[in-house]
Length: 283
Ligand code: SF4
Ligand code: SF4
Image 1 (spheres, rainbow, N blue to C red):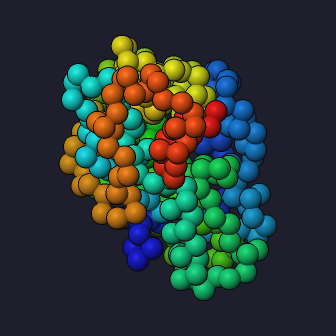
Image 2: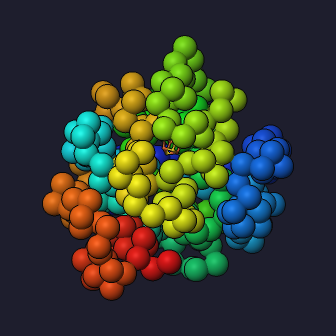
């Protein structure tokens, strides 16, 4: 995994994740994601990897840091902020490539013996990452590694192979006694019981829904939002990314509010091709 570029990883035995599924369904029933249709579909698959790949026995979960010079925040007067993951190349492409390298290293060539999962496949990646020992699920709903913090992206390989040994779950809760992200969230999207209301979340509104035009005056986030990560004490001590694939392509300070107010979809697609930010212009 390290030679493929991952910073942390673990292996989980495939089984139904019934408790996590129950919590997820309660969260949906509370109306926290009414606009995200994909979360309401394939729930059984999301919490049982054997429904994603026939004969699945193991899930290898990998995490890689993307923390960069903008992850810990912008100047206070900056009103054209971009979530730091979106400044680097699209992580979906990179993670799939890295996971293919891992599968090849394991000698797996039969396509029926492996499924590569990055975001678009319904898989409870954060629950599996905790079970793989990578970290805990924080109050801000993100997986937090005690070493790498939360500026990480996850990918998984579902395998039909049994493994000789499996990882121990991460059992500690590094959020005890802290609630900084609740206080910091500009829209009150985080509830004390660790649920995110996606209809309030700036990241969801600007990335998933594309429903918010540039808002320079209230929160200043153009695409995504890092507020509940920037304030997290576990990120203050986390190192910057080391995988060069995650070096940034965009310097957000090159673009001011006049630029964002006037850019056309065609210009955006050309300028930000290959980064997550291009999604803003493909709605
Ligand atoms: S800011 Fe505090 S409560 Fe929020 S995720 Fe980080 S450690 Fe947990
Ligand atoms: S991403 Fe931003 S808006 Fe969403 S929960 Fe975190 S701080 Fe709140």
